[in-house]
Image 1 (cartoon, rainbow, N blue to C red):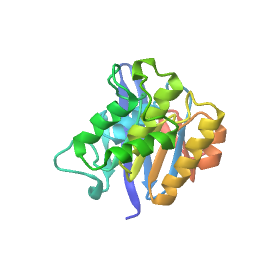
Image 2 (image 1 turned 45 degrees about the vertical axis):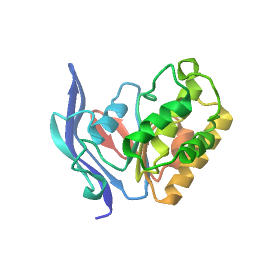
Image 3 (image 1 turned 90 degrees about the horizontal axis):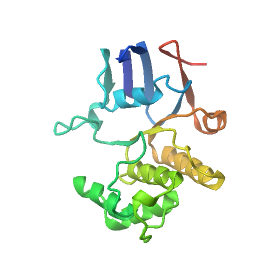
Amino acid sequence: MNNVVEVRDVSVTLGSIDLYRSAALNLRREATVALTGPNRSGKSVLLKVICGFVTPDSGSVWIDPSLLSARRTFPERFGIAIDGPAYIPGRTGLQNLLELARIRRQITVEDVRATMMRVGLDPDAKQKVRNYSLGMKQKLSLAQALMEKPEVLLLDEPFNALDKSSVERVTEILRAERERGATILFTSHSDRDVHTLADEVFRVEEQCLVAP
């Protein structure tokens, strides 16, 4: 099978709002897929459903078993950037990423430093994350997702709060990730991002996922 993720007839209600009704999406191996739609249409929620952070009311999400681990409740080889980075405010960006890297112990300090430089952050900066700009926090979130070289990337508005040069940098990073063999699903409200990167596009429309 060429799919790494299949969203199968998923329905999700949050509070009194129906976000999805029998939504379906197949994420092909090594594809870059964009998810578009109005604000508050549930794009971020679908990413959370896929990685197991939100349980659908009905339907299911199938994930390639090679990406799963019996010891975890979420996929093993996913890189996730949703709702910004999780961070300890009083530590530097490097200190935060090293804390995360210690969980799985699969990458070195130099790997973490290289990822920070790749996204445009200085690993030697003494600035605490509490004092980061929105753009710097976005880069830290991307570094968290990228640093362990995941097979699947789920990225919520990866270009949000970035200046022009940073947008170009991240665009090239995502192209390189696809060339490396990663599968990418990202949300965006920007036609430029979608047309530049996506092999396939799905739009949230009337609680369903449709291909324009």
